[in-house]
Amino acid sequence: MLDVINISKRLGGFSLIDINFSVEKGEYFVLLGESGAGKSVLLEIIAGLEKADSGNILLNKSDLTDKSINQRNIGIVYQDFALFPHLSVFQNIAFPLKNKKISKPDIKLKVEELSAEFEIDHLLNRKPETLSGGEKQRVALARCLAMQPDILLLDEPLAAVDVRLKDNLNAMLRNINRKGITIIHVTHDFDEALSLASHIAIIDNGRLITKGTPDEVFNNPLHPFVARFAGIRNFFDAFLSFENKNSIGNISLNSGILINLASDSQAGKGFYILPSDEIIISLDKNISSASNCFQGIIKDLIPTLKGIDVLVDCGEVFHVSITQTSREKLNLGIGNSVWISWKAMNGKFIYVSDK
Image (tube, rainbow, N blue to C red; front, side):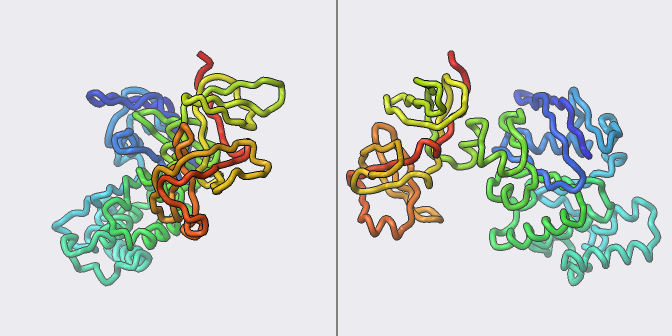
């Protein structure tokens, strides 16, 4: 197990502040955040390339805080691969083995084993400059795993890879993890994190704001930044109040719109979020169990990978996700008057303050 305890680091005008998390053996742990959030700095502190101003790094209860990178048995792969340009692929993979004074026959055997596993055995005599991005990534991973690290650190490993190769490399990373290798993977890519992670921590401006399984983090966001990062478009400043002791509250938006919400949250100021695919759009007022129903005007229709994002102005602009078939069936166009509706249980309130 890796324990990151109260890690802080100041770099110019930027600071990592009291970072705490644990990674169990065999986990695929993703550090997710926007560029400049502090992810790579934290990775380098774990690797021993940067020294924290305060805090501790423990691996299997052994304190690594003051140990050099060579004493940690932690491997790191950067997005630019950092291969030795003057060495062949064989020599790159063999490099950490030579440093361990392993015999030449054993080195040859290990390099052949790893190159076969990563499907780069036909490249062993090539120099890095002749390789594609995907090939370089495989060589970098093979070289890192040659040292049999306790933990594999990946800094934006797919950022420099052609889009069409990402699925193959994703599958390769999952396979490495299934063999018992603990992985900590830094990325700013939401989809990449979801496709790989068993656990996720989100960093924003030097602070770790939430952590858990992908389902815990994104299907039940506890922080406004997480909702924005997950691509939730219906996101409003709001005030929650309860008229009675039941769980149906009133959400007041800045525009004056009142929304019913089934919630056990504390009343007060916060944020109201509503998934765009939970909203029903219709030409007439929807007679159903949906307690929230508003009339509005379509301001825009934006094509997406899954269909159409319809922007409906009801005093607040709501994003509604529909299929292209639904758009054609309803004959929706900019300027049309429509109704949108959703149930009280479909939104979520994130409490911030009652002041």
